[in-house]
Image 1 (cartoon, rainbow, N blue to C red):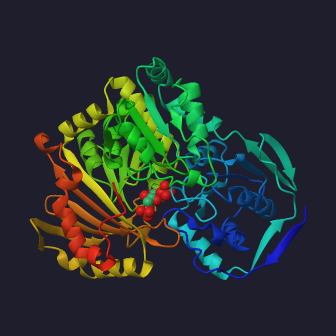
Image 2: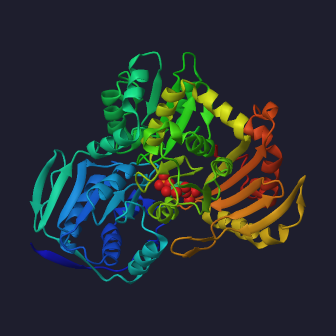
Length: 544
Ligand code: G16
């Protein structure tokens, strides 16, 4: 096998964000751009000779080309085997599952998750380590450092690998195995959930559901698991064929971008259950008939009901949530007598807690839940968890959620996103807020008194690594909170996120619209940041 050494120079800004490197497709298409990043990654990896690397992506534009480059560079690096999904497809949770099952060295996921695709959209790359989870900050930091010093990359001079059919190919010294993207993942799901019980519910044709794969990677998984294995009616899965541009849509399962599903679930003759997943299959949105479950509530409900699910019947070791996620799950943990950890935003921060057996379930407000079955958040897993729960309790999504509020109280919660902002203005707003946040401690804002005003930092309880600057928070005396964060998953423009939360114990007040219940906090957030006057906008782009 001939290995070419190609001379190159660094590109600025190849710094992984919340979840890998995400840039415009046109940026990734520049000669050497992808190769530089991959070489910078490979230069951080020791002892890879003869080992297995998993490669897959969400099928977005440029996925196929990038995979061929990765295979050739993996061959040059001396990997022994590459496992790649047919057609280059693997959902993010499936990559995590496959890394763990086959004890691979690690995996590369080509995805920009919920960001738009197509030639004018985004592309992304992320490295996962041997536990199946996203590389921790110490690894992404090294990769970034290497990108700034890179002067050459190594690539094998071998032909492209056909990815259309399952099979095994020799590429120089490398064995490329093209695998079924669904099978290993489906087997894992079957080991966790009561498929017979769910199939009985779905097969009767009385209980109806709609799953929106948003023209992204979850389509094949949902067809195979929900329709083929569990017997849901054909047509249950909509937008189930992965398209390079996601059909022109925004594969983000929220109330704004999953509009087709939301309209179905709010329409006449709405199905009993609705769910959607994102570009790479790790997010989920859960809906009942005319009813939305916030991701934070979903996490709390899953934790409170885990004993109904075969895979979690032995109980939960602990739970974790990202800092901006509502404190609903904290209440469940307190009642179960287990620990609840608060981590910065980013799934990578759950890895150590899961590996150490300190937590079983974890989740984030950004439509992500998961457990110790893999080291990524997992969209279809959450959907199956809910289906198993509904089948076990014989109750609707709304009933289960309202009963949860009755038992624990309701954490009213909302996130306001200001997308597509000028980066300098977004940074200026955050800098101004940071400048005054600590001095607000002890002061009154409206009828709230600030107990803590700070920039959140985290010390990992396992490896004691420290992460600073993880979001500005105002925690009020009664536990209500306002949080300001700059998103770390955008590609060019900036997104500002405001998170508002307050607790209501009185069931008589649980019916309020969260925007009404939180109106005074939203006002405080807007006034403190000056967002509307400084941007000239009438309001947020997305409200969750
Ligand atoms: C990623 C991370 C999540 C994070 C989310 C939002 O999700 O894996 O941990 O909560 O981004 O991050 P931000 O608020 O910085 O945009 P995904 O689905 O995009 O990979």
